[in-house]
Length: 173
Image (tube, rainbow, N blue to C red; front, side, top):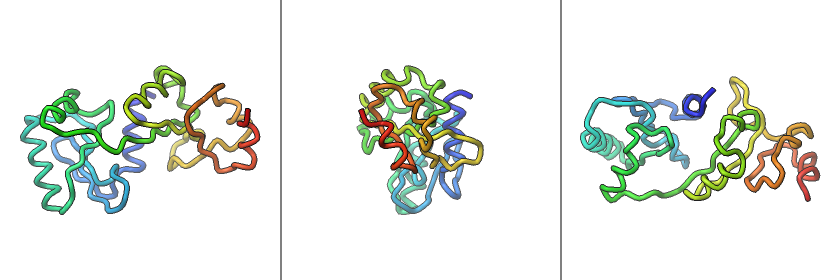
């Protein structure tokens, strides 16, 4: 499985409750704190000119009484979107925490140190979570000694566990 497919799975599992699609972009309007579910996810390609598409999204969100937030990932379409937004005067804010299932680290380029450095360079942190399996909501933790043994030496990100009494002694230096 490639990372783009993993992002698509994550959008399907934890994206907006009632998304609207507009020319390949998923628009979320779910109330709450998480911007992931109330933002534009430009995940799929499109046919409209970028300026037209962006202006339409701004109008749609204004009608809904929400700010137009564009969620940028390495998979954003079109690839020049981030540079285009910067040229329009938009800036990054609220960087993210990236959750990586321990059984998918083999898919992450530069795991662990180069990946951690790359994420930190853009203000993001990494959380290592338990193994992902189909139907998992992404809340499984590193909960067994075997899973903890798979954490790289000197891992400097966060570790998600639901069994702190079991795992904490195994991670202390």
